Image 1 (cartoon, rainbow, N blue to C red):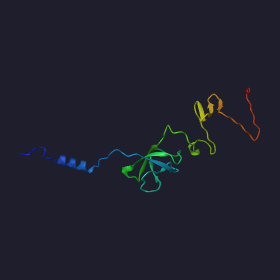
Image 2 (cartoon, helix red, strand yellow; image 1 turned 90 degrees about the horizontal axis):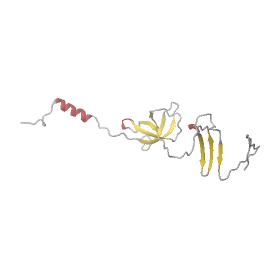
Image 3 (cartoon, rainbow, N blue to C red; image 1 turned 90 degrees about the vertical axis):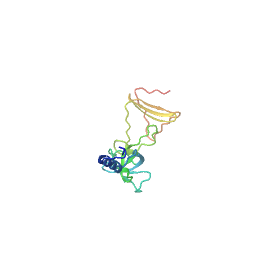
Length: 164
């Protein structure tokens, strides 16, 4: 007498054959790379650790990367697990990182001019020195030592001027 466990139907054998032919995919790997350049069409060229090509590779992207400067970190996945075909899935932003530099290409406006805009105030601070611009039009300069020098005329104008 044979048991049901020993018997297989044609449907069961076909299902087992299909399951064996389909590779099991594990979790997708995300690699942090770097934008090397951005083409006129907004497609980024990226480099990343263990790049098999050894040179920057154009990446497919989930968005246009026109406004990004080279050197920005980008999250990459790979099509079919092939490291020669990266997919840029987003720019890596580190919210706690201090603002080290502002690249002119990150700013809107004409070349040679940097415009910072904020809803309520802009604060530039370094140690005990600060410059505060408020929405109400106030400019506050604070510091342990403030020096104003001019090679030309230095004007102080206002509705009233108070010294000390």
